[in-house]
Length: 436
Ligand SMILES: Nc1ncnc2c1ncn2[C@@H]1O[C@H](COP(=O)(O)OP(=O)(O)OP(=O)(O)O)[C@@H](O)[C@H]1O
Ligand SMILES: [Mg+2]
Image 1 (cartoon, helix red, strand yellow):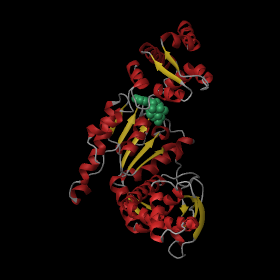
Image 2 (image 1 turned 180 degrees about the horizontal axis):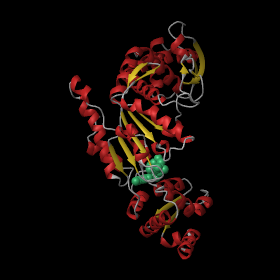
Image 3 (image 1 turned 45 degrees about the vertical axis):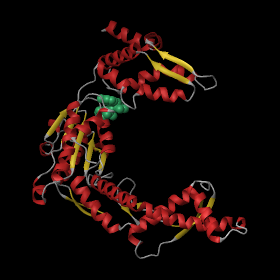
């Protein structure tokens, strides 16, 4: 499915309130990947993506946009944190590891797709094997029943789930685990792929439920049918042509002063990221990858450093800058109630487990939203994260006392309840105002 910009925005709207500009830019950038893919090869080579920086205060949805986007796109997508990287030569993750991660993701994606394509066929074969095992397990029950009929009966019961929990012993290929040389470095040797073709695959006996056996054997059969070389070729192609890398916290590697120390290594990280964003070739265990057409979306709060503190060459590779805005009272009201995973809905579902039917009146939501805005204005602006601490305080009593031993209790949180239970916060707010 190739979403249109409008559809992408509509999907993001389900979870992220406001920030329309950022959503639009991201949606257009995504759609442009598709548009480009429809062109002739020569035209494609000419068009490189317009990378984006999302800039805005803490807790207003930057990372959330990335998270939701990653679930939406079928393209290889990785999200990395700029602060996790260290300059080449130092201990830690080098910047090129983001490309290796992307390829890893891409290959996995393609493999899953191809496995899905053969899954019906693979399941048929797996079922045959399990029927054989079950036949042996239950053959003492066969009595006078002819062999074929007994087999058919077993097959039928297998299909309708009767045997799901029966434990059987199966033989499956024992995949050697890959080993990471230096933890976190991303430099792994995959023993399977080094020795895989030389050594006969070792089989291992395993006792599992029929349900699990079916899953394992189907997987194994599907892997046999999938052409691993083709998976890798396509995986590399997709990483190069459709890959998206989200670099979060990019402001943390921008250096304000030029006084050396930590700043030097931050700038080093920027210098290491630069060729990757500009377009270079990175060697991965699957083969080399050109980074020219990968789309980069970066995000950062930029409240200490500004975009101008990034090295100019790197700024130049992010032509689109979108600003996300601080959250208003109306935003908070919406965030509290509208998204599918809105926090008030989350608490209601959680407490329903303990027989509390929780509702919020409109004026309660208004009061909570007002409080969020006020606290963000008078204390630190932590965006929507404010609402988590407030809600936790507000519902602490109920959360603690609910134990499910009672019949369903209907509870409506209204303005009065909010004011009573957040007295401390409200008072300290008034106090602050007074002092100021
Ligand atoms: N506009 C919004 N709509 C709905 N939920 C939001 C919005 N902004 C933030 N949130 C919620 O607040 C929390 C923090 O948001 P997020 O992680 O996106 O912040 P951020 O902008 O990346 O901040 P930081 O600069 O600190 O990384 C998340 O749980 C997110 O769901
Ligand atoms: Mg973030």
